[in-house]
Length: 115
Image (cartoon, rainbow, N blue to C red; front, side, top):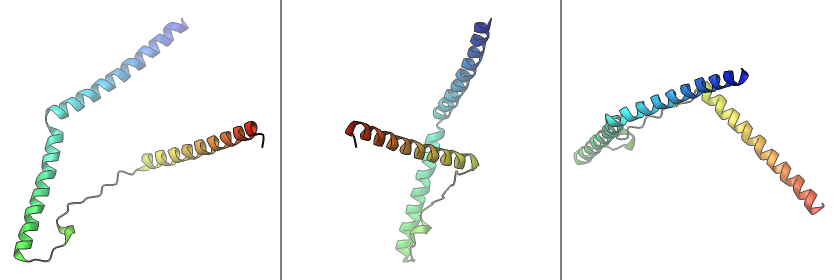
């Protein structure tokens, strides 16, 4: 009886994960097939070409040139509470692993070298 229940739970989890992966694949496939990524890249190239034309016109007209006027640089911060917690957690795990490995190798060095 217990083995049947475990199999049912495993099957439910398996199918949910499978459907989530299938949905993710389908979404990526549709976005690639419709040219979404290429369109985003095309927009970036057009903005760059427009900036180059504006820069060249300003040089021809003898205007003062500031590079920041021609660069479309937006810094987007993707930081939120979850990412901050993840970063803190990963740094803590990293420190624990480094200290643990250092102590282990120091111990092994003392044991095998007899010092």
